[in-house]
Image 1 (cartoon, helix red, strand yellow):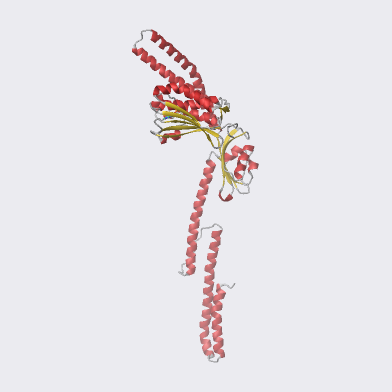
Image 2: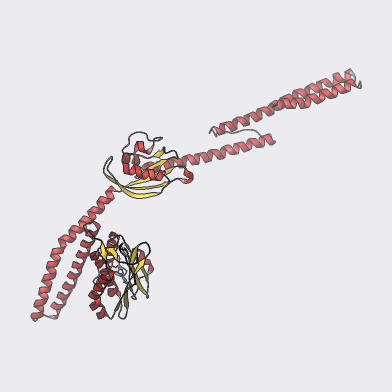
Length: 454
Ligand code: ADP
């Protein structure tokens, strides 16, 4: 390929030489004319030579600038103000250098920020590329794994001592999203919550590990505290309750005044509330700590529910509420702990009766669901619960109307107990409600294998 200088030279000199030769050959030109025009031709040749060289230099400067930018040096400023196409190219290169410099600077700042966020995180972070090599790992992760020294470029197996953690990270690398708690014994006994997901476009995987050991210890401390306090309170409360009952009996026999009777009634009501609170707190603490050992057995729901309903009949009749039990034909028996289910449905019926108004109806129905499950619906035509309360209804001490609940002898723990017991039986509980229409609690339980019709 010919350079610009050569091309310009050929473009000017060759035509001039050809024209001169032709004219000379044709004899139309005299030697003095040739000598006269020679300086002109020489000047033209030298000028074009110099001009072509200058253009070459300008383009070379631009090529150099582009190469420097490609190498990451954006400190480029081309001073070319000829106003032609080449100087427009120079200005474009200047602008490109400025824009690239600011983009590069922004990316560098963002990358430094991300890096320092990752470094200051208490969670362990590890990123692995598609070849299974570590591309990023923070100090927290190295502490959790027990690895010392640089880890970038190594495989997770070379860094992680605990097989359980390695297994979870391998699963993420295989393309599975993982979110689970694991217990590891190396380099020290810890409970870890591993969250991991593959990166987009198969570019590897990212895992974030949260040390939940302390959290579990605190939860355990809280549970132990509640269990110990309620255990310690149980006997004094029972003693006070018994003493109040005895005093009440004395008052019935002796000519006690109305004030004494009222005070005794108040003490009696409040000690009964306290006893119920202590009972529910202790029950919940026992369930949570796993002290309640459930014995799942094939259970005939018809028998269990009929027995329960008859226990509530008196209270229902007193309030003018009607009861109904409906077991769909062919419904399988449930695999559950009869005593736990008794507590669950007992709590739901107690609430239904407690909050229902005279004339309301309560229905307990049993049906077979898909996935080998049995559903027990406890529905009432009571006041209903506004939608905004439903997501928090199963939290301990959550009450729609705390005053009304206390007045009716509620502890605010019934539904929390229901939720825990259902989960412990391998089932669950949910609620549907509409204000002024009524409420339905649905308890799901695993169906027994020896079910009718299977
Ligand atoms: P409580 O001892 O206060 O009844 P629970 O945990 O059993 O506590 O219930 C929580 C709250 O849910 C109650 O305070 C009440 O406001 C509401 N609730 C529960 N069951 C019903 C129901 N069948 N109808 C209307 N409200 C209910």
